[in-house]
Image 1 (cartoon, helix red, strand yellow):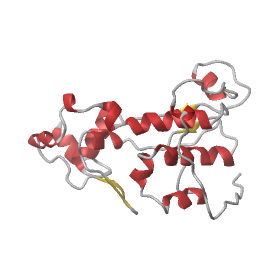
Image 2 (cartoon, one colour):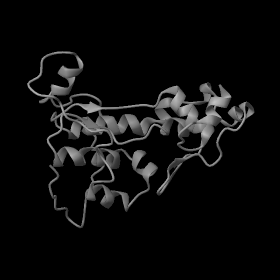
Image 3 (cartoon, helix red, strand yellow):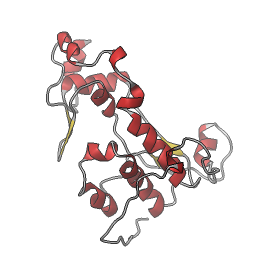
Length: 198
């Protein structure tokens, strides 16, 4: 299943062109298998995509990752696009999944989130008591286009660079999941601190 892919030592990842920044004129979709399955329509085979399909298991991911930290990649549309496309180049998958993280939302709310090697996402100063909510930006202070514009740009660029090969899937964290990380400060089995807030 896994194949070897030779990569040039001078990996070049190009920023978006002016046309690729426009959320219009996307190439026509050539493979709609996963969409047809999601709509309950007949498909000729079971569609294939993988949770976390872009990332650590790919040597080309490590090449990009050696040049930038995790959240810098998430916030840099052409890097997020490149990592999203890597498994599509390698495998016959039926969807691309945008490279990002659910915790960009708490970051947009003003909370510091770090990706710690061997541990995963960590909130160095989690919300300990309700008054800590005052540390977050107020809803009227958050311009989603400014604070999370890089996500929209990565989605647009990736749709262009997919050239219609497969659909692009996005994702987000549910309110409970985001709150649990913001209160707990990191992943946990019981999320007892978050449950205490409830």
